[in-house]
Structures are given as structure tokens and as C-alpha cells.
Image (tube, rainbow, N blue to C red; front, side, top):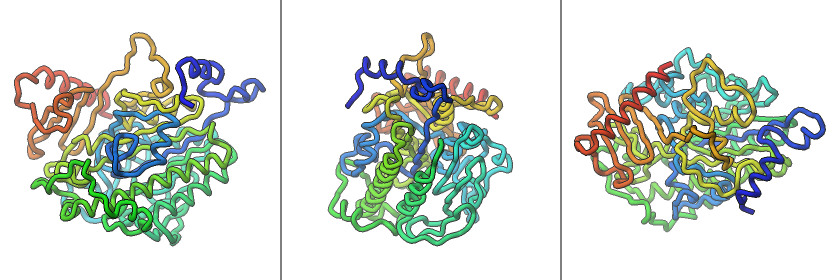
Length: 463
């Protein structure tokens, strides 16, 4: 049943956000909720059914959105998987935590695309798990870590099941289970889900479970035939597929037969979608549904043939921060606390997750970390913001020599020399970012205002 404003406010008054009312009545400490954070790679918002996609089947994600809040305008800080995951888990932007790109274990042919290792200082970063484990949370991480030290991620995660760096991650993965290599059988997403449900079944207290599902390999290896069969005749006419762009770079080989490539990608998304459903069912079987915050998001977007490109930030040369790269899904479900079927228009960022989680649990964000994010718990809960404290619709991003400031109408991209021409897009008039208005004198004030916001952001969050 959908919540009305009256019923939600009545429920909120009866059940405070940070405590179970029954515990409070018995004089017991407040019950802290469990967290399940599901993280995808290469999944843009536009690719999901509840965000308007008509051809890729994501019934479990759509159902999840119906049980909570779907953020319409969620953005990553960097369309590179390692950097973006680091921001999600620390609340700090790449120039702060030091992972500016995706990490790779192979020699770099082009050092401006990829990073061979995290800086030594990353070991001192404070992740959400570092904040929750001291207050009684059992923390587990499963899937693609790729933030250095895959065998033993540390940071308060007492149980880990990780994929070695460079593993193609399609089928029969060689996983590192608490540092010990084990050979598994089956598609990698399904194997990770088996480990995740086992983790859930064993818990007797509050827990944080992060499941980081890797992007499917381009070959489609490991995708069960039942998912491939869903799309064997699909033409994806609504996608806006274009011929391969002369600027296409990463993933351009997928554009030789774009529709065939999308069929595999769509099948992989539906496979991922089923894992979301399986984890929801595990929580329900455990009897923890009402006391679990369930969050789904992605650390990178993808084009899938739009603009004649395939991948994400490095899908083009020079790199890009188009909406397909940075606009990712964010769905937050917490029964009884977050209204069902809510669509939130506020602009939020991957950097906002840690402050939000701390707000939910009732722990302080680390004062020495200079976090750029803000909690979106109030807006997700449908409550009014404090007077004279409106939500500021601004998102920032960076990728090597590109910096972005975006509000709810305009996007400014400033590029260093050699990274292409700087850009301004009027997203209300030009939602597909086709017309660069940077040299248009009518947008001088937009340029000045957003550049000032960008500089202030850099100055405030330089370290």
C-alpha cells in the first residue's frame, strides 16, 4: 500500500528513525538497522525499467523501487569503477582519497587511462565499515573490490569474498574467501549471491553487507541461456543507437554489431536483476525485512550504442562526462521509514551515501575527513527540510583533466589542454547534450556561476 502524507507522518511519529519502538518501550537500547548495499558496474539509470527503459527487463529492481525511494537525479563523481566505489564507501572525492581512476593489475599502455595501484594513504581512509564495526555491526564485502589488497580488504570487513584483480568475472570464478583462493562453479553473479545469502543467514545482530557485482565480460561468458533467450529477437529501437562514432575508444569493438552486443548486455542486466530479487528474499526469510535498509546503485554508467559509443568515461577520445556515463540509479528501501513508490527529484551524489548511512545509524561522520556529501535521509523519508536550509541541486565530477559542475538545468565541463574543448549544455533545451554552448555569449553568466561553484568545491574539498 502506498503511503499518504498523513499515514507516513503518523508512522514516523510512532516509530523514530533510529530506533525500534518496541525496544524503546522495554527500556532496551535502540535497534540499529541492517544495511544491504548492492553495487553494480556499467549500469546507467537509463538502462533500468523503473527509470524508463522499455526494453531491458528489470522486474526486481522495479519492485525494489516500489517499496522505497527512487532518486531520479543520482550522479557518480567519476565514471571510473575503482574511483567511484572508493567515493561511495568513504564519502570522499577522488582528489581526497587518491584513487583517481580504475585500478588495473596489467601494465598501462596509456597512463592517463587507469591507475596501477592506490596510494599508500588509502589504507588510512575511513570507510563506512570502519564506522559501523565499532558499534556492533558485522561487516561483509563480496565481489569486485579492486581498491588494492584484494586478498584482505580490511577496513572493518570481517568477512570478504573478492574477485582477484583482472579476473574476467564471467563464469567459474576463482574467488578469494577471506584471503584463501577457492574455485567456484557457475555464473559469477549467482556465485556471489550464494555467498551473500549464506552471510545473511548466519547473522544474529546488525550487519552491513556490500555486494559489488562486476560488469559482465564482453563475450557474454557465464550468462545462462534463459537470460540470453529473453532478448534473442530484440532490436532495441528505443535506445537511440547510432553508428560507431569516430571518437569511440573503449568498447568500440562492441559497435561492430551493436544490437548483438546489446543483447548480451541486456541479458547480463536481467541476470543481475534476479540477484537483487534473491537477496531480498533472503532478507525476508531471515525475518529482517522491516529492519533492513536496502540500497541499490551503480558506480559507472554506459552508452550501449548511444552517441555511437559503448562504455563509460573512456568510451570516447577525449574522455567524457555525458549523462550516460555519470547518471546512475539509486534506490533506497527501508520499510516503515521511507515512503513506498517515492520518486525524489533532488540531485544526489555517490559522496552522499556515507553521511546518509551515518544519519540512519546515529553515528557521527568522521570530523577529520572533510566529507563533501550530505545526508539525503530527510528527503528520502518525505519529511520537510529545516527552514532556510533548502536542498541545493548541484553535482560535481572529475575525470583526469575534466571537471564538471551541474545544476538542475546546466552542465559545465572545463577541460585541461589536450582533453578537448570545454563545454556548456542547456539540459532543459538540449537534454541529449548535442549543442555545446561554451562559446555562446548568452551563457556567459552560466559559465561564471558554475565555474565559481566548481572552484569553491575544489578549495573546500582539496584534502
